[in-house]
Amino acid sequence: MERLVSVLTFLSAIGVGLIGGLFFAFSTFIMAAFGRVAPAIGMTAMRSINVAILNPLFFTVFFGTAVCCLILGIAAIVGWQTAGAGYLLIGSLSYLLGVIAVTMMFNVPLNDTLAASDPESMDSVGFWRRYLSVWTLWNHVRTVACIVAMASFIRALH
Image 1 (spheres, rainbow, N blue to C red):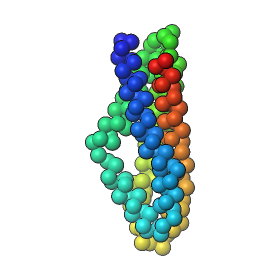
Image 2 (image 1 turned 90 degrees about the horizontal axis):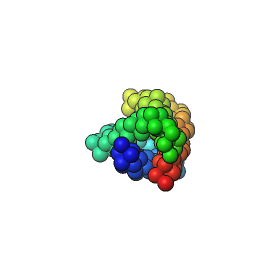
Image 3 (image 1 turned 180 degrees about the vertical axis):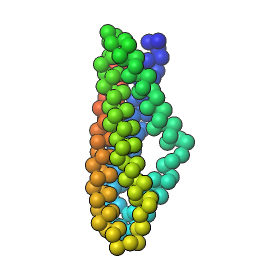
């Protein structure tokens, strides 16, 4: 069991690092770049990303990491007395709540609204400004959650 936990911790650290890097890019320059172009262009580009990201490789890393975190969270609770259990629980909860839950509760609904919007409408400018602000705020939360999770998993391995 200890070997399985070590392997899942290692894989989770890699997974949250990959996802965190993606979120970091959106938080630090991608959304800012979209905000610098005409709303119709930014909206169209973001809509294209939202379609392209729905692919097997992304899903494997995004949800595969969630499965690893779920198992690690359970292992941490069951083996609470073992070294690193607290770090495993913190890392798991950070990813499951700060990434998966935030994505499903906030970013995905915003993306669904964006997909249904008309980039050429008169309302698009105001909508796009609100979207950029709110979506990016929740993306910052996801980025920080990945940093916390990755640091926790790395610490749990030592």
